[in-house]
Length: 278
Image (cartoon, rainbow, N blue to C red):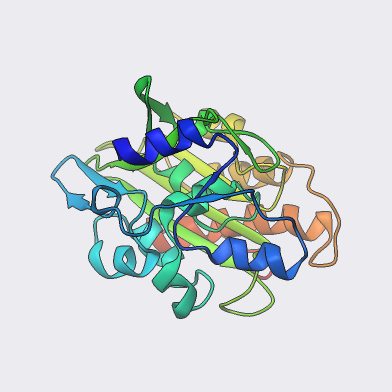
């Protein structure tokens, strides 16, 4: 890791590269390559995966296929999204750090990391700093990483009682770009009141986003069908997505609401109408 950072200092115009899956797409679209690349794919320090009682620590160089096979039931939302991420051949090469670094607003895993409150460990010759994933995305394909920093690890907390799930809507069930990707996480107290809420989406803005106002409105409330209906209505009004060739803005808004309803029905046992095809 130290050697890679020294190489970056000596070659500041070089780009990090691990699985190279996004590079291939860029070259096919005639995007100019970087002047040089620093390959990270054989760095054992970035390929360690630790499942601990209170957190999971994922090296940024861990392949998505390895992650898919290793998580078990530790993080259901992440395992679910990994199963529909691109194709298996891509998952064999693509890395979690690479998916974060490209910062695509339709990156399938990014809403999941938002919903799970991921914390990112970033290294440079100046030292190490932690970045909350909610503060990582600065704009369209822009991140809070400094030019000399390398994303080394992703830490996912494992709070007891967390209910999580993720969903991807696309024209094909797999190996396709998302129309909307969503991930949700809730914790309830003994009386069924919401004490923690995360609703995160991709495909509705220039960055992956959370429905912050809806999350706040759920806290302290007893989770029932009335609250679910109000929350779904609020979710639909939370975003102003673009119309594009994949879907209309109105369809995306409907998906945001209906996917949350599906989560409440499937994971929390509530009877909620789904609305749009989710």
